[in-house]
Image 1 (spheres, rainbow, N blue to C red):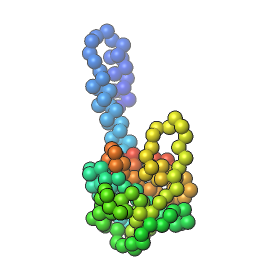
Image 2: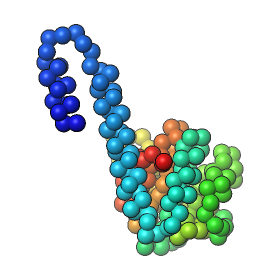
Image 3: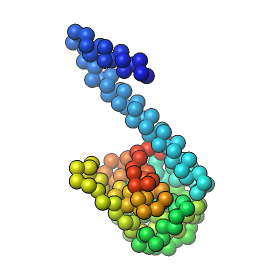
Image 4: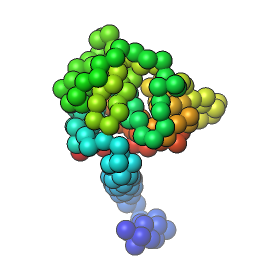
Length: 183
């Protein structure tokens, strides 16, 4: 891939009228794809010790992303998160894609809040998370993304986010957001 970049830059210096913007677009798409695959790998590593439901979570996020149904899923790891959130509706249910997808149907009573997951259970839904303080000049983030970052700034939880506007899925850990593609 390094040689591809070198070749492209040499071609820019040549005196021809070929427009290379298409090639730059292809390179950008490949970099985004690689970033997303790496993030999915790290996500699996981050979750593997805390839930056996990675496939179910990935399936849920993919379906929600395709439908552009916004979502916020909190996976508790070592630190307890209950002292940091405003509790919603207690569920204590088995984690299944169909139940998670139902919770996040737009217009439903719980769809705007976060789902709290512990191990392989849905503990509660409709939870409110603390928001991160986003400095002026940073990219505009919605409330879901700021909530994901806010909780992960205060705990070791991992928070999965699906943007209602774009359908893009991300996860937050240590107060940072990482885009990924749920496969």
